[in-house]
Image (cartoon, rainbow, N blue to C red):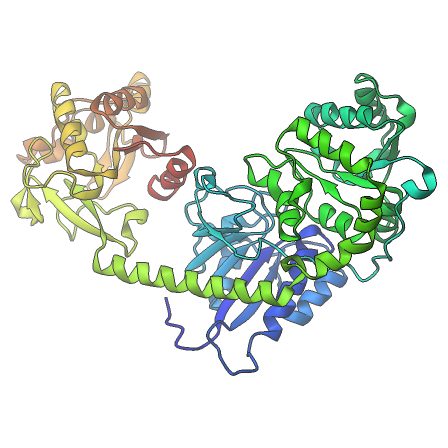
Length: 584
């Protein structure tokens, strides 16, 4: 990583939604503020940035144009993942930000190429990416209270002023009077995606309607042009005692017309557990209070975060009964509704939710701090690298190589071999690794060794592996796959070449009993004394005490590959490690 030394930090944003999409609408003003703050008027470059945006989508519109005017915009939808990663490296991006997560058009695979030293998830996704190569996720204390860490592989960074900021579209109309003043009844509403509706939502919303006599519910989304869906939604409320005449369903319209239709809603009802984001911002901007029910997941706390940032936490329910109570109480207070209608815009404008410049300053400071933190960690790792104990590697010049994942700079190889002519760092065997201290290595790599001991000695070998590993250590073990080899034997190909190696052609006989030429030359320790299938090796690792295990059979090499951790490991982390350390 390059030292900053007062120069601007190079930031890159990757998204397929840099258009009039929720992500594009939220991010465009931040990108403009980045540009305005790139060289502060004070001359202080402490947190200054240079910004690139990588547009992986097909849509280009006024939002795309605004982003292009604010930073260096690259259209990359035609590039494959490797080419895009190469472009990002060419641009010398130092903090790369994913705005998509696991949504349509995502380019998360690019991040697996590690094109930038710091990689961050922000804004466009509401959960963990599950990927070890994402260094952090940007949230806030409202979205991610204490304990949320258990839901994320990434480190959580809590932005002090909130996870996002909002600016209305230029065609947003003026706030209309509360509709109850001329209809004579309360209209609840939701303009959220109908995919967020579920039986729990129907139960609560039906109880809200029952608790507020003569009230109506207005739902609007593009799928409500579909008659069968509309019938299903009406039936959901009829089944809960609500007359169909109290439910109004509206299909899509132009955005400007949609915003005007908030004039028909007194109180917005937030679905759960998938709550509104931009929809809630727009409802509040149009003077409509939103009732929400935050739960344990980030996705359920989006509206709660907005309400908290503007000082209206009172509209966040503790449970279903509280949700109904808040709706009923607010619906009975028309004076409060009228006041909220008149003051919500001013409240939002005075809050962090609409302070784009302040938000962008905190965002830039966060990027700088994260870059410097990871730079310090890399320097520390360079001074104190992780250690991988390479078991039976042969000679350094001609022997086995570590998997690519172990060849990264943060790993230091320690070689242990039974043959002194191979000039190992440690002379020893799998059965006696007494020269290696307890809990002293971060990883073990054993390639085609474990089949060289007798079956009854396998537990001794695995116990030694477990002993020398640190509590969070891992072992990567590869050996012949007897299922694949025996399939060749069954085809009467015992002495036919199964594949070519540096030592020449390898036959099923060599794989079963050890390389014949090596054993003939007097290297009797090269003979094979046992063998494994994926099932039997997994069982042996479990019996030895390894907590998490992932394995695969590789037909091309007729071999097994196993990744095992000394301590428990979350499945997403295990999968990610397997992707880095086991061959494809």
